[in-house]
Length: 335
Ligand code: KG4
Ligand code: ZN
Image 1: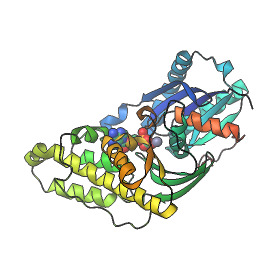
Image 2: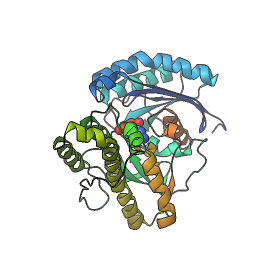
Image 3: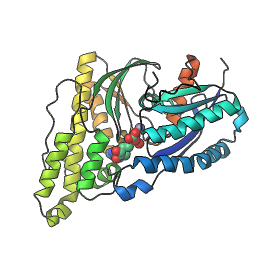
Image 4: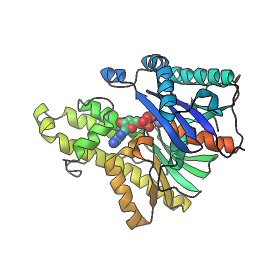
């Protein structure tokens, strides 16, 4: 294998159009264009997302090449998100990736978005990186998973959500409060001025390592509907802080459960919700109280981005795992 490879990585699984240029696991450029149009609808509109990807993908590529000072003919491999994600959005990225691979006559690597979130911890600029095996908690707008990671290519799902994802719990509850989408970052901010123990909300009784957030959402909705507008306005900080506290407690309980089940103390926490400052604070506390060491990617690699696709491709390249130009089964997620 070459000592140095240049990777062009493409991420279009949801509502962020992103292209990164990597030299091995180092980021030369990571351009993320977050689609604003969905804010008008309080959630991602799949048809609009794919149209936006189609509109943005070439300008995002131009900017990535410009920033990295790399030209297309220096690129050794094209990587793209194969799934999971919104079908129309994925198709824009996959068609674009295949066209580049074909026209530049270079290999193609297909990436599982969830694995990429986990491997984002190995992007060069993260200071602290775990040894294998470790357990990953991936908490995003679409997924909540616990994954046993034995190598950069061996992932075993050990827990998942039975209904809503953790990010959805933030976003849907935020919508009930009248907050703009995505509500997660806003709730994080507002909560800093609130009391996390002011209100008690329902926690699920799901055994083992699976998650559930829909009961909490219903409980929160019923509580808000039973209160006056003035009450909500005067207590918004406490409402956000108490909701955030409940979501984070649910996540922490499962981390402790996974530690006990697998005897592993190293955890990578990734995906959009890992940017949450209250969760980060609680994870720090786990180090002293339970000997659990958490590894968190830099915040810029926590939400959807193409650098994480690039770092995953770097490992797949090392193991010579390549994709096919003619493979049509978009529903098959790459291993
Ligand atoms: O990983 P991501 O960018 O996209 C998906 O693959 O879903 O995650 C987006 C999710 C949204 O639900 C958003 O509200 C949540 O991550 N999020 C946060 C924070 N920043 C992003 N949730 C809580 N606190 C935050 N600071
Ligand atoms: Zn994601």
